[in-house]
Amino acid sequence: MVRRDAEPLIWENCTILLEKYVKNSFNQGKLPNPPLELPDFPAQPPKSIDILVSQTLGLFSIDKAGFKSKLSEIFDLIEPDYVKRHIDPESEREKWAGKNIETISKRILILQIRDWLLAGLDESAPDTDRWYFAISTFIGMCFEASDVAKNHCFSFLISISMAQSPSFNRKHKSSGPHHIGWDPSSETVYEDISPHPSGVLATNLILDYLSLSTHSSKLILPFWIENLTTYSMLTAHLNLFLRIKTTLNESTGVQSEALIRATVNLISDFPEQSKEILIYAVHNNEHSIRRSIATSLPKLYSYDSKLTLHLLDILLIDNDETSCVVATSALGFIIRMDINLFLIRAPKVIEKGNQKAMQILINSSIREYINYDIFDRINLLPKLWILCNETSRSKLVSFMLEIARVNPESFLKISKNISNEDHNSFQELYRWVGMRDMKTQELLQKIKEGK
Image (cartoon, rainbow, N blue to C red; front, side):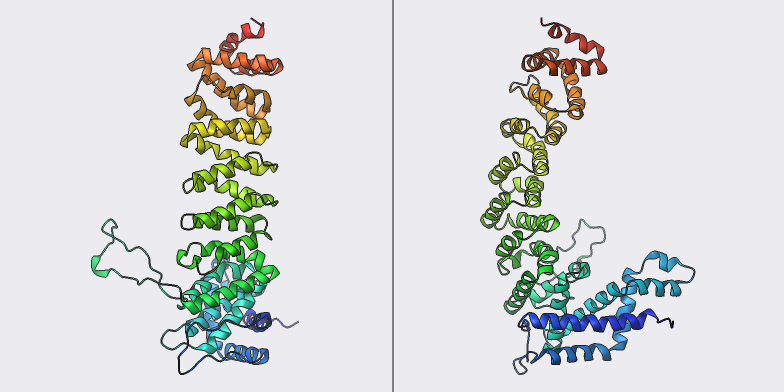
């Protein structure tokens, strides 16, 4: 069998993928119009799929030098260290490349999209033909919904929205005198970049297409929506809240988490719309959605404490154990914000009887609670001791012994309440205390004897 080098195999695979991507995007519907075009040379959309495929493949095929340059760039970016350190790196590179033809090919096509967009979004002389080559390849690659597309194509969406080439400089905070290397004479001032009306139309159409594809709607769209929320100037133009709500109904796991994080990211600028989504989501039947909200409670509290408490009250009694446990961990910061809010909600966790939630409550909140009320006026500790398992009792008895050392009167009061409510649980307390501190156990002797 004749051995073939990796380079021609990669080139061949690039042409196969390119044809597939262009056909898939063209068959989806009308391609987005270029945001930029010269008045004297209006854009001419592709008349047929055959013409578009032929032109795209033809332009790619004749640029062999560009292909080799992109291949070298990708090798520099993703080639593993073990290849570079090998005694014969050229041979090892061939083996590695031969096993990763698909990934390398996709990364090369992403660089090709970049180059075509550079021409298509050139403000001085936009090349509308290359725009159609770029956008059809981009959309088709997204339909495939590979990790490569998800992780490396998002920046194109921002470029299109702004009608700026992929290399445009975004505004950032300049350095100042507090930085060691600050030089006022070399300060660079970046202009504000605003959404471009035609670019926004193109981006909306791309997002619409992604939402209609089974694969991209689940494997790319939720994560790109989350990324888009970091560009506040785009939120109002891209119907993000409607997209979040629609996509949320079909999402699970990490996809749901991304959409909830996106909503939380938007709450400072769009409180009402975000609140509507979160209240809708907390009643969703999908466990992962409610778990994501529970995880976000500490961040939400700083923006809307009333909404956070409403969501917390629902999640503390959730039938999904994990949602309940994660929500309980939020009581650890609630007790530091407002002890009264904690006193209302901690008994609900105990009444629910979720052992993991009670363990979280003990680990995250009980020390703060004891510091606030060492006499346990709401009788929280006896209820916890009676209902929790041995794992939780191991930690709780440590707190009980701390109380005994600081305030024996309070320790006896709490122990007496345990005995009054459940004698068997008191016997366990007596045994646990004896294993840790015999002198403290002697304090319980009278209660044990019923005196």
